[in-house]
Length: 120
Image 1: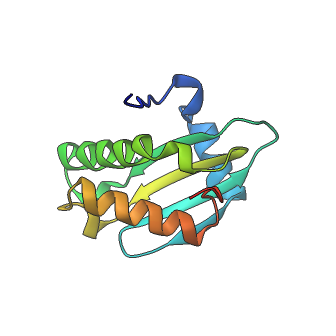
Image 2 (image 1 turned 90 degrees about the vertical axis):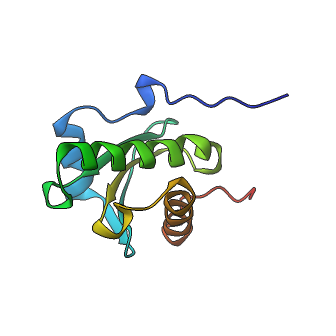
Image 3 (image 1 turned 180 degrees about the vertical axis):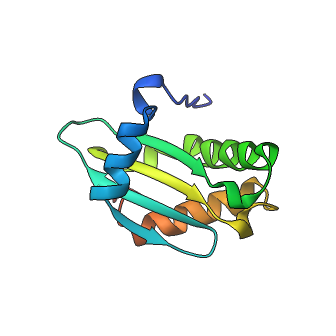
């Protein structure tokens, strides 16, 4: 049986206010490829947002980067702890990367931030 993971609407940060709260009050962890902002929340849910700044290139480039981050997270979302709000922000070295490199960067930084579940 194949597991299918979706990224439901309630599991995403959508509003600017939500992103700003995580940026302001959350703790950040960074490597060369991306930055992860982590903010504990008071629920059993985990919400995640994806961002790419204008310095990375055109809208096409930024949207592709966000799609890669979204897919890397979606495939491994069962490995993350609940009760946190996350924002994944792509950096310039990730622009030309593929899904494998993006996934590796996300998982390495998540381990550094201690937001991966113990059951790995």
